[in-house]
Length: 168
Image (cartoon, rainbow, N blue to C red; front, side):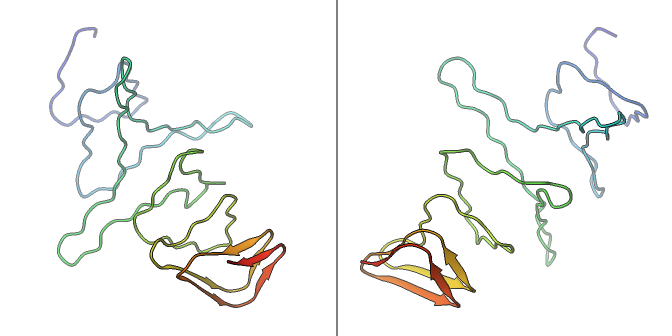
């Protein structure tokens, strides 16, 4: 079939279906069901699994904006609970968020449940009062500078600084 077609009503495809040329419009999925969009597992010995990319459109011409990508969970009804988003929770070796030199903003609270490494400068709080609280044993391999007029720093545990310590 080479002409444009409109297919109406429920359709079931039980084998590989290839769409070339894209899908125009939304891709609605049925309600009250869980859905999975997945790349089939590799069937060739020692072959890597296929990648899956979700990407918004690039801008055209000289000065057009790129398209935004939104990922959101379902909203609760009544006294239910809003849905959540899990990224890399089952088999991810690592999760990369953001791009070098670009700001990554997390508007809600951030809970980190395992040891973390911060390799750049870390700023905590803001004016006029900056507060830093450290819970548990902490080792700083480098210089620690606590500066400013109304800086409130509380350390609950042992602090080891392998470098200079400056309270200015």
